[in-house]
Image (cartoon, rainbow, N blue to C red; front, side, top):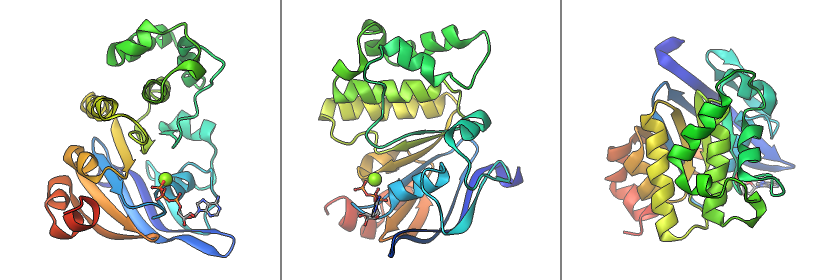
Length: 238
Ligand SMILES: Nc1ncnc2c1ncn2[C@@H]1O[C@H](COP(=O)(O)OP(=O)(O)OP(=O)(O)O)[C@@H](O)[C@H]1O
Ligand SMILES: [Mg+2]
């Protein structure tokens, strides 16, 4: 594993029909980092994550996880290798309970520690424990985000991809979600965080990338980007 690089994206281009949504991006995520990818609506952040996880075919470029190309691999294969995404919009199983959803997150596993890991998720999200027998579809947006993150953790990811976990949530719930993202990272999970909430995402980040109209225009460590006048003007309303 060269330089502890977990994920390496090189020259990635993705088009929808004739529209080039991602125009050649390069970035990497190293073991133990929390990397934030920020950018405005339509910048190409979700498209980039979808290309990484095989949900969107890429026209050009390569994606390596642990030094091996994962181009075109599906969710099951990727999860087996330790790459797990929580998609935009969460995608919980609405007609299953909290506990059943968490069990689904362990679908790639076949070991004796699944129950113990459910308890760990309940430790991170006491709200889920209180509601363990409730149907996921009846939960609030913030609770569903917690569930989606908990379900992803059940796969024991080496790299967790989060697509706008704070989107559409109340300020209190936004605080809670960023707190937990930080906890997950501190517990040793490498995280790639896609966010429109640039200040919160960069505060937590080891490193960050700024994406604009399908290209990466700036990169650096989290604090440097957070204090950069161009970033502050474009993304923090200053
Ligand atoms: N399925 C699709 N078909 C056609 N165009 C698409 C499709 N999905 C995304 N696009 C276009 O690709 C561009 C990038 O979209 P993408 O969803 O990747 O942006 P984003 O950075 O995730 O934005 P947001 O912050 O609003 O989620 C946009 O112009 C969008 O309209
Ligand atoms: Mg998006």
